[in-house]
Length: 116
Image (tube, rainbow, N blue to C red; front, side, top):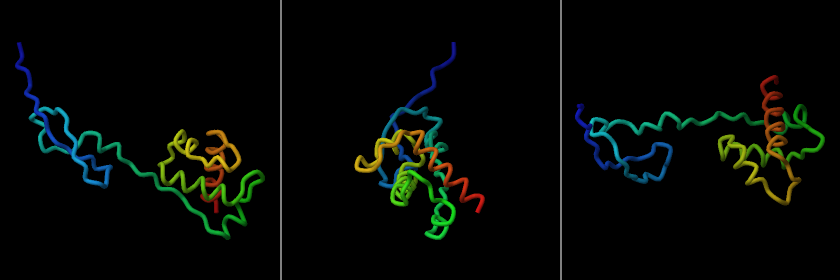
């Protein structure tokens, strides 16, 4: 019969957080001092942006205002393209949009920007 590997209640910091919060969980003692195992999932998406000239020349769209597009891109940047959250945070005073509408506008704009 194999020996049970020892575990220890250890502190860790999540590198995705900027506030330096310290959390605790059980880890094998042989993993002490190693990087937080879920840090590899902390990826930031590089989002494109557009200028006034680019918007007026290439990105005009019937049914979408400049203000709505700006808000959409700000939400995409803030929430790293997590569409359910972006949809939830979509301002209620603006035209109601489905997740599919938001995604379609975002990806149409980014495709146009890549072509320009």
